[in-house]
Image (tube, rainbow, N blue to C red; front, side, top):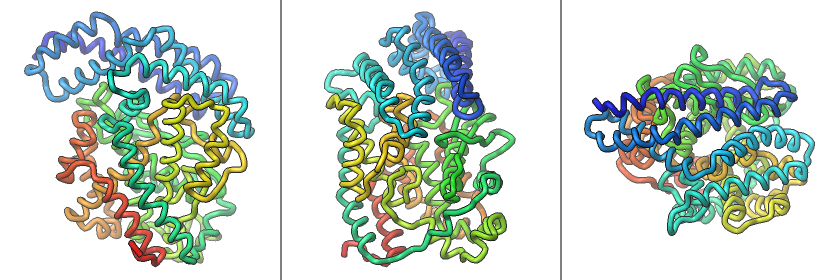
Length: 502
């Protein structure tokens, strides 16, 4: 046992308490708080952020971490991981002036409300000055941390997915562009018509909420340890493994809310699977955002859009919406929820085109960070790229550059994790089909066996392992995006009767 670690523990608990309180205020800000509360709440978030900053960068804490690193052999695996994460957090924060850190926290706490209003009113001009401030802060903070030979955008990417820099992602997205863009054209030129009109209509919000709760629980979300609320943009908040919160939003597209609930449940199930000895520590959350997205998109797509998934539960959905879906067969429904249709909104995108939406954001983020792109030019550049890659063009900023909350939160470098997560998930799926009768389990309604595999092999490790270590341990090989591409080509080739490579 390390005396230094025992002395460090109350410091860790204090820092975590500040962070948990801040997260709780941010959750409230996006869900239940009245509109007029946001400015004052931003000050509270700034104060809590400042307190967290001081707690982590306290010279005493740094000295204890250094001693713990010397005492490494006397620490448990979990303790070593916590010390490692704390050392990285200290290195990340100590180069930032405390006042700037607090100012940025207050700015992002305010900016989400400004973004939401701008999106609602289709008013990019009102958000642009705030976005410029956020970009400037983000670049400034990255410049404090950048190492020799490293790019500014690499620093941001590393916060969300260690080991995946611009060079690696350029190769990954290059593969997606080279293989999926021409395949998408084949599908759209195939003449195959899939009717999805019945997914849009008078789907009452209270009915969507009821069926959403059913499917959240069905896939494994525990309402004794979590809640579901409504927000402008669906997200998951993790306080600890006994309090994980998800949100959704409702419109007249029933599949939007349905799959956002299953998606966010995937995130939540990951956090609910963190063991007690890790939760509420720096190692007590998903190992990376890419791995997190692998779980949410695994539940949403590989499970939720799989026809076998609907065998035991489609009748329940029909009973909830008898007028809209009562006469629609399960086969028609499954074809509709897998329909490929180039669209403007990422969160409403089909599984095939989804990563092309992410590709566009990745390319624009590189331009903002590496090329000093003027934020005023974003709406046109965004629209041009959508027209180039997806053949559609937004007519306004709300369905274009204002559609995502991420930049208002300062989350530059996050978007690539969505595509990486999709690829991680496909690689896991390829392996799991060798290990179990995956579709057979879905047809029997046995999500538990699949979920337990994920918990044992991924969730329980928190940040004890990196994404690449988990991939190697589970599948026997390093990251291989070809599994993702092959999965999409096979699935949609069959759906649209288009032969691969022809």
